[in-house]
Length: 198
Image 1 (cartoon, rainbow, N blue to C red):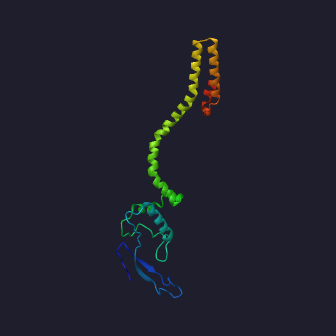
Image 2 (cartoon, rainbow, N blue to C red; image 1 turned 180 degrees about the vertical axis):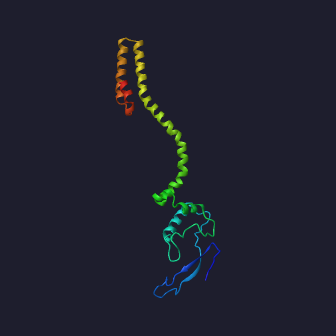
Image 3 (tube, helix red, strand yellow; image 1 turned 180 degrees about the horizontal axis):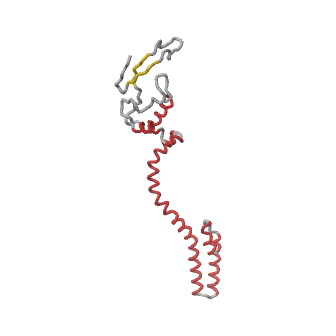
């Protein structure tokens, strides 16, 4: 007997003799069945992250096949009664998203959601990253160069007034500058400017 099925959501399944119970020989002969195709159906507001999780679970449980289905037959994109969700289509074509292959579901899902915050944030912070090095250099140099200004004031004062009282005052001021500079801490790349000062 030949059966031709022209309904996409129905399929023909051959049940071999004795496959259900070998001892009792159930079924007693090869039996042809007409079976509806199983569909996973969700509402439109179903969360996209859960689509991947459900399909991964369905693949793990049913992907290897059984008495009635071949391996890889469920879940699949074939014989559908309803439109296929875009996230489900992506999963069935490419497998789980990149992050879910290497991270637990909760971590991959969190990063996936955070990317909508992180990417604009990086875009906003990028100009600041460009401004930071010059600002940092200026800040370190200003800590050193303020003492050069102090030295210049002392030098100008000595040139204007060279009597003993003024020289003693300037010497005390120079000693104070030397003590303050000795306590100054700067990165190694700026040490040469500090040594020149001392």
